[in-house]
Length: 360
Image (cartoon, rainbow, N blue to C red; front, side, top):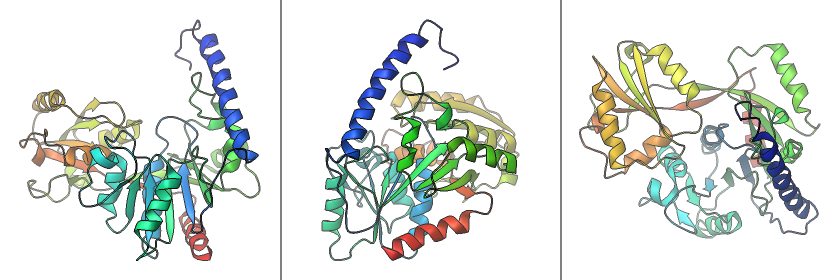
């Protein structure tokens, strides 16, 4: 907002008032049951946010999938953003990033025992998952990016908030980045403040807690990002299985990102590698042939031992892309992102989620 020309601010603010009116009317209709919101007989956990841009929904969804899949038969349902298909699609052995979306495909590759499906109509998607898995019923369904999808009434609602952009200090679209007013955080059972500094002080913790003014029934957690060892996207063509932090010190990297917020990743790699050059693309970007030519040109500018580094979301699109040149494949490494709870909250969160599914 602070970078907008002053002449545009009043215009955008007026549009945000209109947008807010529409959103408030919609929520009113759901709150007073004038629009239907369906409940299901099995636990449905929704993970989402109320801001545009990256707050960390996918890494937190993956954390929950990893946690629950140890003891339960889990399904994950997403709308499959920017996929080329329509309606309900299963993440089966024929699925690609194009058919189910990059993030669902990424999760299916990481968690092959989890049932993955996509459908913009979440009610229909849940019903299809239950029907298709009747022989081996699912115990819990996790909805990715579903905080605004109110046609389904989740049994547990998890709201992710970026610590660098608290919703209480933001404004509605298009003046700000909020999809709906900050007060609607009241629908959440669990609130997670993501992307925190690892050295979060007790004063910072108390300050954010005070600003959010949560209700007694809501549980507040704080998380940060950790990064795993770089691994080759095409291991059969690469020389090393992984690249450790120690090995990174002698490498030059071309970091190619098509995600909403690549800053943290860039800072991590810049602190560990000999040199990094960056190529920043729009979120969920569909690579084209000319992009691969540009990647090859930028990569050629680097000296010494060098690699191409991408995010797991970008890797999901690259993995099945027939346009990806063979000469680039051995050079591409993937940087995995891991959610880490701070203030010793991991055990408490794990217990809350697992106990909830067990009881229900």
